[in-house]
Amino acid sequence: MLDIKRVLASKPRKPEHVELTTLLTPWGERVAAGEKDPSAASHPRPQLARDAWTSLDGIWECAFVFAPDAASAWRASTPPAGGWQAIRVPFSPEAPLSGVGRQLQPSELLWYRRTFDAPELAADERLILHFEAVDWACSVFVNGVPVCEHVGGYLPFSADVTEALRPGANHLMLCVFDPSDAGTQLRGKQRLERGGIWYTAQSGIWQDVWCEVVPAAHVSSLVVDARMGADGGELVLLAGVEGEGTLIARVLDEGREVARASVRTAGAREARLRLKVDEPHLWRPSDPHLYDIELMFGADRARSYCGFRTVEVRPDESGVPRVHLNGKALFLRGVLDQGYWPDGLMTAPSEAAFAHDILAARELGFNMLRMHIKVESRRFYALCDRLGILVWQDMVSGGGAYGAWQTSYKPTLFRASWSMATDEGPRAARRLAADDPGYRREWRETCVATVRLLRGHPSVVGWTLFNEGWGQFDARAACDDVRAMDPTRLISATSGWYDRLCGDIHSVHNYFRPLEVWRDVAREPRAFVISEFGGVSWAVPDHVSLATSYGYEAAADGAAYAREVRGLLDRALSLRAGGLAGYVYTQLSDVEEETNGLLTYDRRVNKLAASSDEPR
Picture 1 (cartoon, helix red, strand yellow):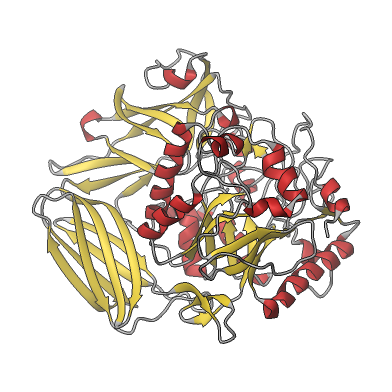
Picture 2: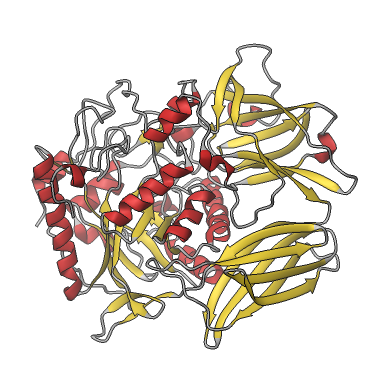
């Protein structure tokens, strides 16, 4: 039965043009005070790390330039003569910690500049410049020389800038274009007019900028694929290489070599190594065991790591499809992680802030984070690997403006519509805001790149392809493509509704009906997961961004909040006997107007702990 009261409480409303109250997390407070972040010494690329790297984060300059043809001008524009102001990188200008407090408009370009001293390079050395993420399209210049272009707001890219360097101070510049939701590109939950479940749009550099010195012959990329076979563990390393040489890899378990292999590249741009690890120590949340990897390629030295584990859906002893980790049934206790911060927006103020959220989720009894419509910093996934929590990774959504009827009202009111609508063909693409071929191409390319980027992390156990119909298209074909790329993880092809009867998970959102296990009509057995539910709201005084709040059910006080949240979690857990394989509670923290988090937006109050003298 539909809970009309909850439906009306969650009805989307027109955004109010009210400034957000600035909240600082404990880590953001230290950043704002100019304190050095102790986590800044950790490597921004943990699975291909070298010692000779330098962070370029810090104080840069930025300028906003009106450009009515911004969508094409970013490739050939010239920097402005004036209007420059200081900005703290890697925080976007919209984020308080940037020091700018300015929203980039679709008719503007955002310029960045800074100087840096290039290290002295030997004749056989190169300097590689890295950007972990820039939203959305940018061109990069060193000393006025164009060194690269990149399109896509969530994935890292790099450029060899050696030929553009000069002795002494070098000038680095970027020109950025980002239309946010005025365009169809991948953007996740960003909107120029934030409100409800949609958050402040951000632009430009929002993850680390760094450079490293490498030999001319070096490993340029690495995909780590650790699998379990019938006779033990197999580690497959796919390394991109520059130059010729012999690639040698060693696998170490607490300093002891357990495997070694080598291959001669002979001019190839990629090298593949297979290493056998007998009776590997398996990774699991309660024992997140990792192996070290050492790479040698001529004079190049790099380090990585891996973890061995299996994840699959298969029937339990009663014939009910369950998620199995390392051959044992595991009930997924997940929580939705939006990855937003009041002081940094999509940029965490510190690596310690990541660790806080991961540990808070574990302490609250969850074993999984659903990283929602966002690809996070590589440091985040490395922490999940080390701290022992599962990650269900969403692909980033995009497309045109989402129609409220198709993506909200119809599936809320008519559950039967969830399995009756196709997502194939031009009419379906228009209905689900996926009719721009440029968007569909970007989604496919980014999906491939996301799988490649994260497949080495043992904590990542599943992929969500589409969420609530946002820009959904051809989910069956996408599911087949991801399965071919990565058969070692689970796939939730459609989270929420518009199920296409594919993938490993029958994934539903249930905010408005009694929690129960629904019948699956797919031919192949799938595990039933309530992948979003809950959303109980409590606005903790002095820890909110707005006087208004949004959620699916408002609690009068902390005691009522705790009672309702724990009741929902207990009800979900009780469905395990009836076939429920897992759940994802909404959500880990408040975000702007949304006050349905277990933690406040500033991460200073754990609502369940604050509501009782005996938190569970």
